[in-house]
Image 1 (cartoon, rainbow, N blue to C red):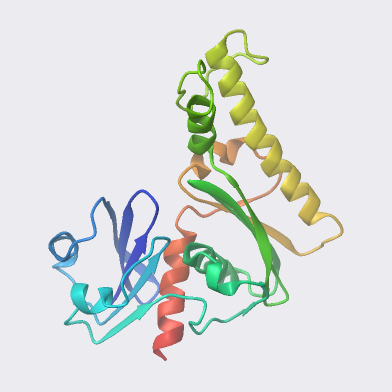
Image 2 (image 1 turned 90 degrees about the vertical axis):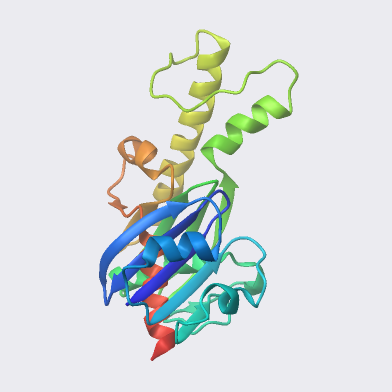
Length: 240
C-alpha cells in the first residue's frame, strides 16, 4: 500500500492507496510521527511519498517513516512522465508538479490547463507531454486578508455567496470585488488558453475549487484531489 503525505501551507493531507484505489484520506494540522502513525496504523504501508510546499529537512523521511521500505521525497529531480520546461525548476512547487502528474495520468494526449484554487491560485499548462509553465495569483482568502491588512478601515471579510452587485455597502463591495474578480480571472484564463485548441481540458482543484466550480462558464473537470492522485502516480513511477 502507498502512503501519501501532502504538506500544504495550512495543513497536511494524508492518503492511503492500494494500487490506484484510494482507501483512506484525512487532514491533520501538525506533522508528527504520533499523529501520522495513529491515522494509518491499520494499513500495511510499503511505499510512501512526501510532497511539501514548506522547507523540510532531508532527514524527514528517516524520522517519520523508519520502517517503510521505500520513501520518496518529491522534487523537480524526481522521475516524471512528462518534461518540465521551466527556467527555474528548483523553485517549482511540488504541489504544482503533482497536479500536473495527476492530470497527465488522466489525459495523456490532451492539452490541459490545471487551475488550483488554494492559498494561491495557480494556472499550469501541460501540452505535448511537457509542462510549459504557469502563472500564480493571490487566492481568495489572501485577497480578503490583503484588503484588511494593507488599509486602515477595510474590514476582514469571509467568503460568502450572498452579496449585492454592485456592492451597496462596504462588506458587499469587498465580497463583490474579490469574488467576481477571481471568477472573471478564471474564466478569462480558460478562454485565452482554449483559443484555437481542439483537444483541450480544464481541471479545477484546490481548497476553494468547490466554491468556484459553479461560477465557471466553460466545461471543466472538477478534481479536488488531483494533487493526491498525482502523488500516488509519481510514487509508483519512481518505485519501478
